[in-house]
Length: 151
Image (cartoon, rainbow, N blue to C red; front, side, top):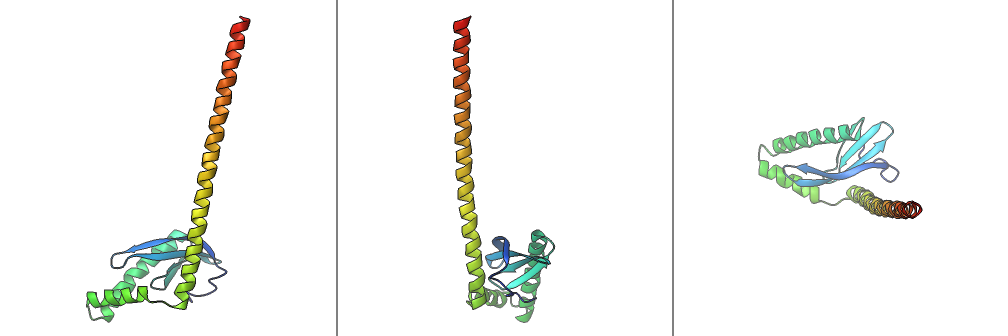
């Protein structure tokens, strides 16, 4: 699969971090595609697909395991050399990574904006609920007094 296909027009389904035993956390972005989902490890430029976002991420984790084993094999069993190579790859810059990181930051920014809006709405709803409860209790209190005055 061509990992860099139409990044700008791809719909982001999710984003986050992949926790890998050698490189700790790597950036992950999941795109909704016409055939399912594509999970991309931005740091190593690896991708996998699946029918669901979870399946694509699970497949990417398997791919990372295979990639790690292959890198160790390529370095004649020298894990340290393999991990150094993977680390250099993860921190190397190229134009494709830059495009993915731009999409990643856009998704993260939108997520934070949505969270702020949800918290604001939740506070607004909570304030409305308390105001409504105050009105109910105040009107109940007034009714009670009126009923007491009539009786």
